[in-house]
Length: 194
View 1 (cartoon, helix red, strand yellow):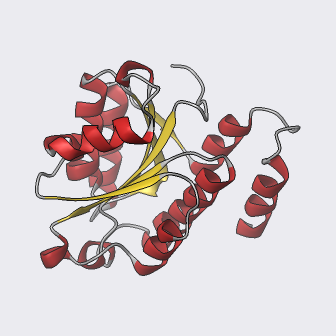
View 2 (cartoon, rainbow, N blue to C red; view 1 turned 45 degrees about the vertical axis):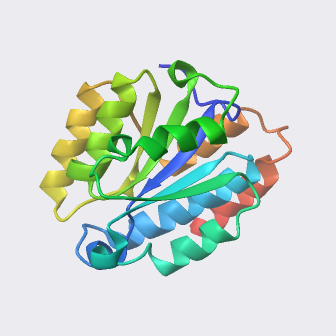
């Protein structure tokens, strides 16, 4: 599996919504890591897609994540879905193609954050891989309603050839070099997290 490339990447944030967020394992870690991913996407001009699963019943995206998403200047898209996996909605592929029209699916790199690891995140990941995409799962931005469930979901996605990574590794792969124009801002972000 190759390193992430800013020109091939899309950040996909899956269903970080109200009622679910209250019940997941390590919610603050997921929120903080996702906010960092959003900031990194802005620094490196990586497009972002946010999905919501039945928001009428489950609630809207966590307010601080939604606020950060809406303020992005980079390309972005939103979709509401009824299917558990994002790929089950025909709009998903259309939105990915719109965010990266120059990149065929077999060259796209999808960086994933979201919940729940064993349902919507896993179904999305497995189908993205089946369709030829590279998928990089940020373990620090993915969770569900229990530590064991999360661990086994990450294991299954890894066995299916997803890369298990974290938001800091993503940033350094997007930068590649300390001379990248976004490196200082990224470095400042990571200092603020400590």
